[in-house]
Amino acid sequence: MRRRFRNLPIGAKLMWIAILTSSTALASAGIVLAAHEARYFRQSLVRRLHNHAEMIAFNTTSPLLFRDEPAAASILGALKASADVYGAAVYDENGRLFAAFTAPGAGFTPPPTLAESGPAERFEGDGLVLVDPIVFEGRRLGTILLRASLAQMHRQQREFAWVLIAVSTVAFGVALLLSRGYQRDISRPIQELAATARRVSEERDYSVRVPVEGRDETGQLVEAFNEMLAQIQRRDVQLEEAMHGLERRVQERTIDLERELEERRRAEEEIARLIGENELRLSELTALNREIEAFSYSVSHDLRAPLRHISGFVELLRKHSEAALDEKGLRYLSVIGDGARRMGRLIDDLLAFSRTSRTEIVESRVELGPLVEDVIGEIKRDAGGREVGWTVGALPAVTGDRAMLRVMLMNLLANAFKYTGKAAAAHIEVGVGPADDGRAVVFVRDDGVGFDMRYADKLFGVFQRLHKAEEFEGTGIGLATVQRIVHRHGGRVWAQSAPGQGATFFVSLRPATGRL
Image (cartoon, rainbow, N blue to C red; front, side, top):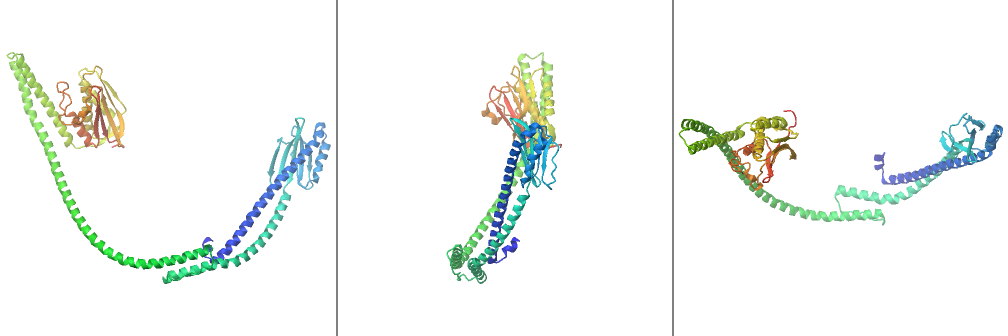
């Protein structure tokens, strides 16, 4: 429907707009007036019924007091003069029917009992029901029930509808005549404007103009259209001039682009050459690292046999010449034996450190809680009777190589155990810290000697120690091994401490996402 309306000529559109507008206005006004009349009639009917109820209540007081049913029925019979009420009933104080009235042909039968005590009013079907109490000196003697018909309101509505139809028909005809007279004055300039626009579109002739016939909005639209044609005509000339200039600039820019492309090509070739050199250097560096690791493994492995000889012959010399050696000689032998054993531990640590780089990682789901308990049990077995308080929180499951993670935990917990050796009642805690970029964080906290954070960069270096060997034994490789294992698992390790206040080491690992 709307598509068909959009395709109509503007004259027909104006006519239909006038007709539809006037018809809609008349229909809306009629509906509003009809609704108002119906509302007014209902309110008037309610008031009339209340007046009837007050009058009946006043007149039936005595019959109710003296149980005079004929007198009450006679009083209700006066309602036959009312055009609205077609049924009435009076009930005693117990709700039983006392007297009733029914208009001829109404077919009203009052109920024998009435539960309602009023006041109440409601519209039911095609009528109004009113319930009001009968009160005398503060005592309720009974209840009045009145029923009224809305037939008179319906008659008035039908009469109003016929009047509205007649008025709308006359208004429709007048609107049709007026719209036909005025639509020509409105549609003719617009039709001329449309014809001129069509000509301009087809012939590309921007010199034509539409005559201006008034100063209203249509006239202003025609003037604006003429001005637009003039501007387009001027811009055509400017555009032709600009096209010549643009062709010249395009040629110049093409030359510049060819030069830039040549420079970019040379730069890409240089980048490719540098990338090739970097890849070669990376390959050489990788091979060199492998050679260094192999060399470290070989040297460490080959040094074990001479050290075993030194330790063995020192022990044989002690047994062979113990009686002949004085105290100083025996002390020299003890120093040689301790040095050999320390060198052996250092070689073992170097071998373990080398294996952390060469061993292939076999990832699986690793529950850190049981693994930490296992490591603590091993440390307790080797503690030599030393008592340390351990606190282990609820640790997460991570993704990694179980054997390597056990080595990492062993080094961290053994490090905490070692540096709390001078505490009277040492305590070591293992727990979970805040997540680090989506990774699970586990910390190991002790109340040992601690260290100065100014030297924290030396913690994870090979053979780097922040305490003297006479104070705490060790080779300085344990934390370097921890760092290498953590890095191979894609995490990081860091520490916080202060001298005399213990140390806390943090490790971030990839959390387990399911059964591996």
